[in-house]
Image 1 (cartoon, helix red, strand yellow):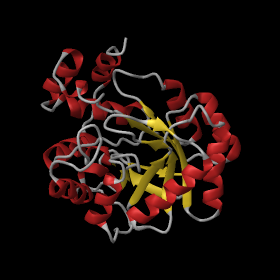
Image 2: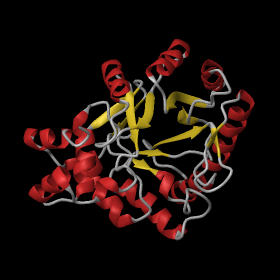
Image 3: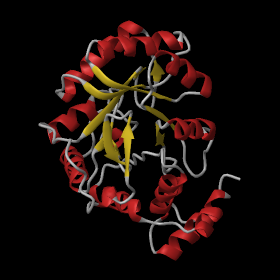
Length: 291
C-alpha cells in the first residue's frame, strides 16, 4: 500500500486502520449522492459525478463507501468509470442486503442466495476480483441475522471479501456478528443531532473497530447556521457543515467520516473540515445540541 500524502486536506485528521489490513485517512467519501433524486437512477450530471470522484482522490481521500442499492447499481458503475484502474492504496467499500423497489424505497433482503448474487454484481460493476470491505447493509427481520452474516463469512473464505463490516445494528447484533467473524467496521446513523448509536460507537472505540457514521450532516439540517452550530462556525470563519464534520472526527478516534456530495465545491469544503480544530468550549457548546 502507498503511504498517505500528509499534505492533502483529507489527511489532516489522521488515519485509521481496518482490522490491521488497510490504513486510510479518516476523512473519506460516501458515494450515495452520485445518483438521481431519491437515490434512484442516473445523476443529473454524470460528468460532474465523475469529477467529484477524481477530485476526492486529489484531496487525499482513499476510502470510498458505496452500495449496490445506490441507484441501484449506478454509484458502483460510475466509480468504476471514473477511477478504474484504481490507484494503489484506494479502499472501495460497498454494501449488500437491500433492494430498491423505487425512489426513496429501501427493502432489506438478507437471504443467503440474494447476498451471493449481490456481491457478484458488485464485483462485476466495480471491476474487482474481491471487495476490500463488504458490509451487510441492514438486518433483515425475516432472516436470522447469524445466517446473513454467516453468508459473508463463507464469501470471505471463498476469497470474494477481504474484510466484513456491518451496518444499522444494535449492540446485540454486533455481538452476534462478532461471534462469527472479526468485524472491521460498523456503519450506523450518527451525527450532532442523533447520537442513538452512542453505545455502539463506544464499543467500537474500545475494540478498535472503525465506526462509519452515515448521515453525518443529518441530510441537510447540519448545514444551516443556527444556534450553537452557527455560533461556532462564525467564530472559526467556516461553514456549519465543516463544524459538524470536525465534531465527528474529534468525537472518537474510531470515527471514519464519509460525507457525500454530487458537487466538487462541496467536496472540497468537506475535505477542509479535516483540519478544523475545535476548542473544548466549542465541543461543550455542540454537545448540548442533542440535549
